[in-house]
Length: 397
Ligand code: PMP
View 1: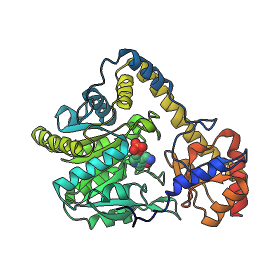
View 2: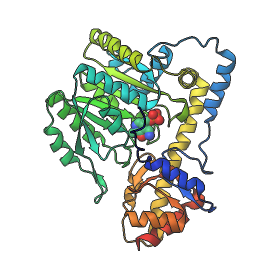
View 3: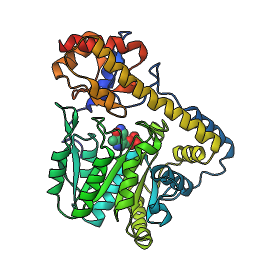
View 4: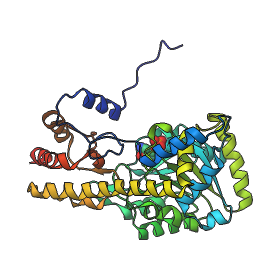
């Protein structure tokens, strides 16, 4: 059965990680892989996570099955974190939340659910979008179309073009938006733009689908959730896929969640039963451990404070590195304007350099980034920023 199979090309980011590992130069810098790193280049376990895990070890009483939706307490706490404690969608019992294996699990289950509601529906995704959106959504049977999003020359959102494209969408089409910290561009919608897109989606009968994988890594938990909360307060129906991989540093534990907002509490019950059946048919139920850590943190005043403090250190570090890199490039006397790095949010930005320059950075300077010139800003550190800036200056001159 397997003899006719051919090998598929390796994932570019994983290949880059392999090359980086093999590189023996001591000054090497990894700006490729999309995980948060501290000043020492490590991705440590957050202290609040460690403390919650220690509590769980002594307090957990059973390993029995958890159910399709995962933990009810996790779902309650995470919906409050996303929407705020007294969001009308929560008060009116219009939402269903389910714990999922990571943000990817949430995206795929939402896609399966949407395909079940309206087979072969069209999802509009931003150009560019996170690479894995394409297989995750299309393997569920959804059709994909793109709307213009990032202008690589002007380094800003092509908002007019985005709106014109979405004007062409048909009633019932789905619009995938990044809640914050757009991956890969770092360019986020501002408040007025969220308002305008919401008005368009309402007027044209489009379904908002928000992927929020970086809540808290931009400007803060509430600030980063502005778009999700605004949309949820104005539309009858929407879907959300969220991740705890980055903001709790729980990457390998696979913690995410999906939220389905329905027009009424009654419809929410029906939608919930469909979502659970979809989950049952795929993986039956999510793994428990990571979500148990999250719910322990979010249910404890002291652990939540500790976690928030740590999260703020992370987003301040990212925003600080953005400022420092822009400044360091200016000090190198480069002609190009890199101030967009400072304005953009989250871990990623496109440097806007070409493949030849990217290759030179890797071969001559041991600085690694993917071919699109997307860099993970968190891969920088005070100790290497001058080096990275002078290397970039050298290859773009
Ligand atoms: N959405 C976006 C935009 C992402 O960047 C990621 C992670 N890279 C995810 C979803 C999913 O993350 P995970 O499955 O690791 O929670």
